[in-house]
Every structure is written in structure tokens, then in C-alpha cells.
Length: 301
Image (cartoon, rainbow, N blue to C red; front, top):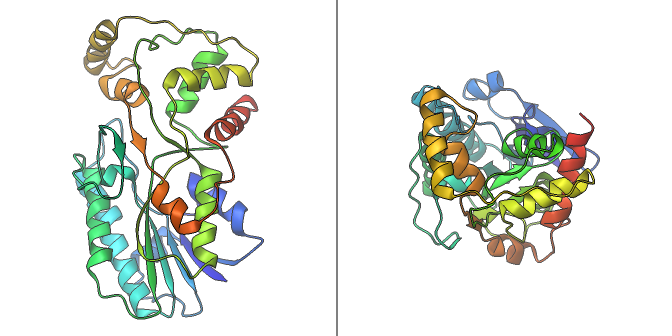
């Protein structure tokens, strides 16, 4: 299969290349190539287009909001238009659960009415709506994947921050928060993308992507601790006191801010039943095994 991919320099892109390069003929579309796709149409020999490129959610909130719409919506629109005019059969767009909801009560499914609050989520949803609104020629398919928090070797972000706390023997002070959230091993995401590339029995649509089991942050700390043979140190400090410190962090630019606290302690459970039913196979990794692999990669740095 001849597969064209955008965003290959990113975390998911690097892992995806490793995962499928021995099975398919890969072609990379650079950001410059993506910007000029109208003047230089897609090569007709491509069978599948995987659109990974995008502007990620900026937790520091220093980005120009217009950048989200230019990158996540306008470039996706341009690429999808090129797909419709090409001989390619499948278009796989990596969106985000943040296109559906910034916070979740219960379990997030594809049936939920999207209500994003950030420019990141809104721009991703605009791209989704554009893809869904275009007449789909016979023989073509599109897949909009909404992954939750992706992790794996080479991953940076809150999991890495949590690991550094554990490694240094610093007690985890947020054990007083009762939460459950979904994670996604990058290997499981790559597995699903590979299935979509190779099979013709999966219908077009929106699919949430997550590992099978949600975990509390306490459980994640315990898994990270076990990876370096440490006993987890969990402090159950009053959540109201922690929130007060986080609000102070918003003003004084402490490492702990309200948004980072929410990321670490909120419940955000995502259902993967639709994609699993469509594929009809178990995911390669359990959530715990995936986190163990991620932790092991932190340990080598």
C-alpha cells in the first residue's frame, strides 16, 4: 500500500513510521508541501492519506488563536479537497477528544454533542465538520480519529513530569483527588491506523481512540513507581488547599497551575467501544503495559 503522511516529525508520526514502514510504501508530506498542495496536487499513486500534522494544544496559552484555525482547519480543508480530487481511497484524520469536550461527566462516546471550549478543540471540530459535509465519491472512505492523552517512548508532558516526581522520591500530593481518566498507548493508536489502512470493511465516520481501562492518577503513580522499584508515596492533602495553591500558581507562574492540576486530577473517561467493534480485535497493549513501556523509556534518559 502506498501511504502519504503529514506531520511525520511529531511524536505520533515518528512512532507510526516505525510501526508501518516494513509493511507499506511511505511518502512524507512536509509542512511546506502541505501549504502548497493546491499548486502541487497529491501524487495519484497514493492509496491512503494520513493527516497527523496540526497545532497542538498550548497549555501556556501564548499562541495566537488564529494559528489553530489556519493549521488545524484551513490546511486540513486544503488537504481533504486534494484527497477528493486524487485517486487515493482513504483519508485518516487525527483529531482529538478535545473536539468533543473539554471536560467529561460519565463516559465520553461518539454520540455526545460536541462542545469544545478552546480554540484548539474548535479548530479540530471545524475540520471534522468540513470532512463530514463533503460528498464522498464512491470507493473513498474517511476516518476521523479522536485520541485521548497519547503516551509512549519519546513522550513529553504531564506523564514525564509525574515520573520525575516519582524518580526524585517526591511524594505525590494529589492523592486526595478521586478521579478516573483514559490513556492511549501510541502503539495501540498505530495498531488502529494500520487496521484502517489495510482493511476495507470499516465504515467512514468518527471514532474515539483510547486504551480499554481508565486509571486514577494514584494508579498511574503506582505504575511509574513500580517501574523503578520504588514504593509509591501518596499524600492525601485537602483538595481545597491544593486548588488554592494552584490558583496562586496561575498568578505567580508556579509549576502547579489550575489547568495543570485539572489535567492531573480530572476525570476524563473515553469509550473505545465503537472502534473496537469496527475492528473486531483486541488492542495489543493493556493500559498498564503501555504505561510500563512509557515509564521504561523515561528511565533511559
